[in-house]
Length: 295
Image (cartoon, rainbow, N blue to C red; front, top):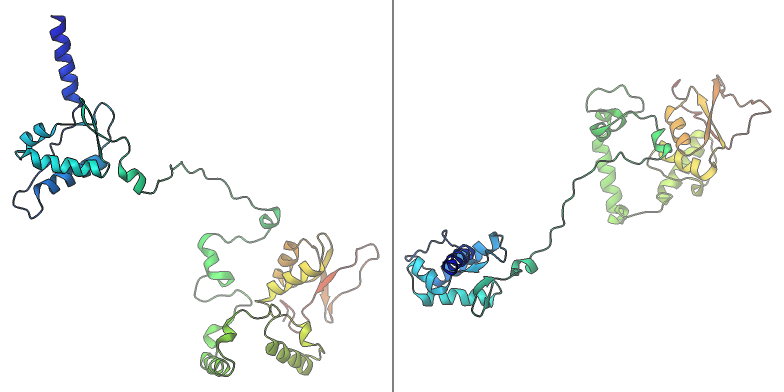
């Protein structure tokens, strides 16, 4: 009696271990041969499934042919192709099994294991944290002028009054004369012809005698102040600015590490007298032509 029960249990376990293909549907009217349909559907089933040693054994070719109502030769052709492509392996006396690693394992790029993202506050230097700028997010997309529209922010040009037609005509003339090489990287000091023109202008209209080599073209006032501060002032050394004066000057010199000392302004400009105990400035920022914000 015990021997009979063990045989029944063993037979039940074996039947449970055989992989079933209930989803296989063969179309005898299709142009695709039956063995190719069977091969393709078994392959897709193997790729999409998850198998273990206890559930990776395929039914015999005879049993599968009987279940699908096709010839055993058709099943043999499909199995042979799956064997050849590395999807199946055979064990003598045990049957046909799915291989441990399917071909897709080697043909597909490995996806890195995704770990939950942990948000950390950005690591910023004290220099950046001390910048007095309250803008955030998309506010940086518009610059200091803010969103398009009427703006009362100082130093913002009236772009609706810009002579675009004249600018385009002169730009076309310069490109035609000097060529497209003007669009490449130029000297870090700026275009030589532009520096010569500025030197002549400063001499004729401002009374400032300077050589073109003393002029550096920058992207704006703040970049010019940053270059000057980093080149001339060490951290902790004194920089004088006008009070009242251009508020961006305080920001630029402070960012460079200078000790900013505001100096009063009278009708002659910045007051340069200083107490004897105060440290001498290493740089003085003045706006003699158009004092900000007094005009």
